[in-house]
Every structure is written in C-alpha cells, then in structure tokens.
Image 1 (cartoon, rainbow, N blue to C red):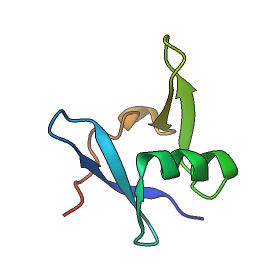
Image 2: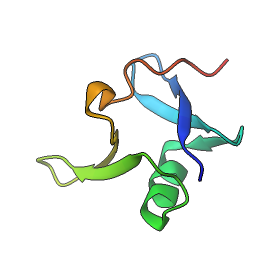
Image 3: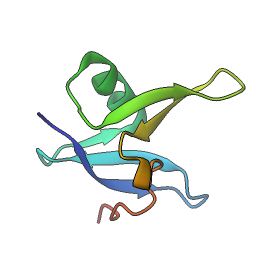
Length: 72
C-alpha cells in the first residue's frame, strides 16, 4: 500500500503537496481523499476546532510531518 514519504511546503510553512512511496506528487486535497478511501496508509484525517479537516501522520513521533524531507 502507498504511503507519504516527502512533503512540499509553501513560504508560510504549510504543506501543499506530498510525494508518495510510488513516486506520485499529489496535492494536499488529493492526499486527504486518498487517505479517506484507503489508498494511502499511515495518515489520518482530523478536525480542528473550526471544523476544518486536516491530514496527520499516524506515527505520534512526527504527527504533523515535521521531519519529512522536502520534495525537490
């Protein structure tokens, strides 16, 4: 099954896209849809206090993809 291996961030530090273990570069929104449908494993969808969905890593040691390498 596919999982996230790298991230791309904007100038504010927000994640805007991911690279998967299959070499695909996908948008944040597509990653959320594929996580929800079970295509991507190791990530979950959460909800913030404002009711907005966000993607987080199932591994508690790096929940917000902080230590993931950037996409070049």
